[in-house]
Image (tube, rainbow, N blue to C red; front, side, top):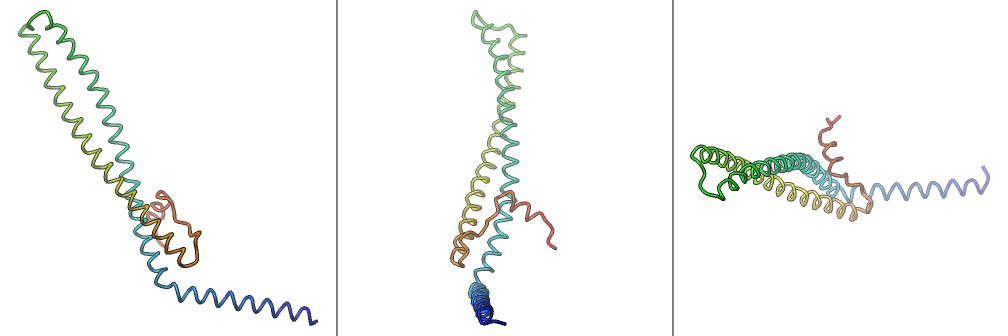
Length: 170
């Protein structure tokens, strides 16, 4: 083996040795941080799963409230015809009974719609708090990874984290 080849082999071995010692040092020095990242990532996956579920429920309830609003608008127009009838005087007993029945039905639908709206607001509030928790966990993982010398550590999106959580472990 010629002298330049030996020198190159020596340089390669020195580089491999330095990189190996850096990796070993990182493995030992950041043991606690890696354990913390694993714990935070598990919390992140659980939060993401809840976040996706509450988003789906929130969207469903929002659509329900919108449908109920459309029905209530139509029912209100139906009730308004009784008001137009009454402008010239009192309603007949038959018309009054019909108006009272429709008004009662309308008020029940308003109560149902308001119950759906309250449920949607609760779910939406839960979704917002889960989103804040998810972002806090993601920021914490990024901060720890940066301390470990990995500033480009990939934190999964909420959907990816939920899919990871649903996947069976090997």
